[in-house]
Image 1 (cartoon, rainbow, N blue to C red):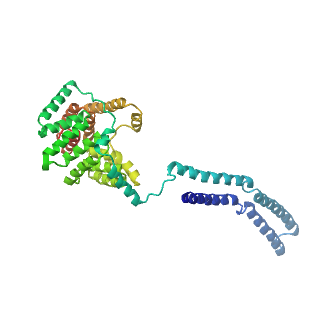
Image 2 (image 1 turned 45 degrees about the horizontal axis):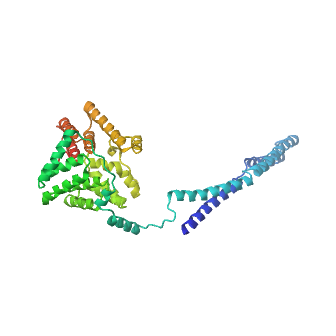
Image 3 (image 1 turned 180 degrees about the vertical axis):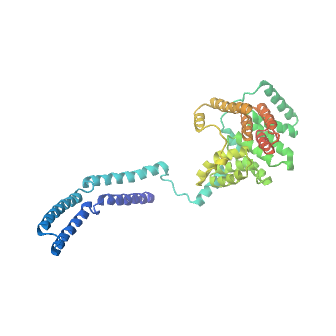
Length: 408
């Protein structure tokens, strides 16, 4: 209630000041004819001085006095007219002030009800931090998050690939301690969108690796868990990310997902700071760097930071805002076809015209997401051949291939 009283009084004060200014108008300003009136009176006094010195004759002086007097009367009449008719009519001014006051006060209330949070208590920093910790401690676990996911449609794969995947599953089931088999199973289960089975196989890889498990293995496990939960970072996925960061605090993919977790628990300030530092150290074309670039400006806005990407670090050309808006309005099947069409166009252009290593890396990553592992492998091999003499380009391409599950 106190808040409403304060903003109402402030609005009334502003409206009163504006009304006072409108009521006064410019009535205190001197009419233009007043200056002419002073000049004519000085001229009339000058005629008497000239006559007393004998400069002009009496007859000439009388004629000059008559002309100046006529001008004085005309100027005086103009002054009175300007003072009486200056500014709008008083009733019109009063009506304008009333309408302005209503618009100002009413507009303030409507704007606050639209953009503000009526009835919502103040949130000091200490309370916001407490709420963030509460969200972090009480958020759903991995199983609960997966249970809320809609049924995933079966990926359409080639019959030969499906047979190979079945054989791989049977082989790994009979040899559960085969780390290479578990690694392949994790990759190929992810290719067909079976992320729950993929992270189960990747967890086995971590277990079999023991102390030799590095940041990549733990991050891959966390990523598969996050994808299985539809982008949600569960406490279990957070624990795997922590293992990765303990082994390599500068690991880019783990830092990206850690920032994602921070944003989900209500700490966009920490997420933005982490992403900004990570982006500054990201090698050109790194998929996780591109993911940060695509989201960091929104994260900065949520954190209350005025930030924009420099032109040289802007994301590579991709679908337009119209494409994204259209994709949000169509069915999942049509959206998949739309994405596949964009991927095919990029593939055709690279095959005929070539392109930057970042674009080859993007194509490899996109094909991996679409579950076209064989095609992604073929593009990867072609890219390595095209950039065989460029070590920096090869590093970008290898990073994209690793993120797509083609290499280790």
